[in-house]
Figure: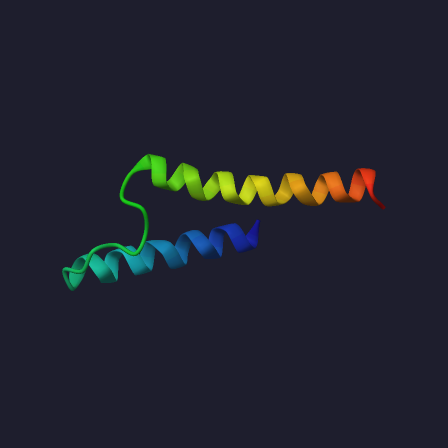
Length: 56
């Protein structure tokens, strides 16, 4: 949980700094882009679960 909070804090700081110096944010600007990133992570987790469950 601490990693999640630190990642959120780092993201907030980067967002504030990028906005302050008028640069585009270094992340997908729409929800579909964010969901794509979540999907990639979820796919990785599911793959690891399948390998551990059925091939170990």
